[in-house]
Image: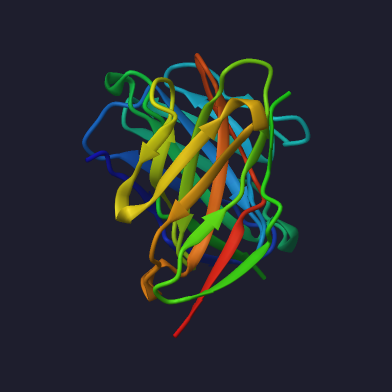
Length: 117
Length: 113
């Protein structure tokens, strides 16, 4: 089955530093990946759509200069939280669309827990 | 714009009892509908999905859901729950030709012995 991995699974950083989160599709090619954030006991909120070889599309209210997305290949998208602050602490989840499956939905990674001190 | 409502924030059922989790959606055309399950600190696992055809959809782990267009609902059911079913359940809607998903707020399921 389609597997999506994320690295790291958990990261703690100091305020003002940048953190990079990787999202990989392990056994399929993903021209489109999605980045979500989830606050405790809340739903997933779509942050941006990452398209291989082009700029990401950000949802309203998401700062593109703060959350940098790079979809460098058909199996890798990265989210960089720049100059992180405590309010950026959250659970970040990526998903990938398996083009070959003809639109059968998204496959989700296990998530990355970011804690900014 | 599409939206999803899960009216039950928290449901508690006894092990072995039946379960129904409610989901109502708002969308202008026939939607793609999904149910995902999330264990604490984990990502989401797809339980089942509806795109077209038979309105009763079978999923993994003994779950099923029924698409009712007249009620704009896609309720999740299981005839007999197991302690391992305790988790957070999310209903989601997507547009045909656009994989952006809108999630409901989730229903937390607690199983008591």
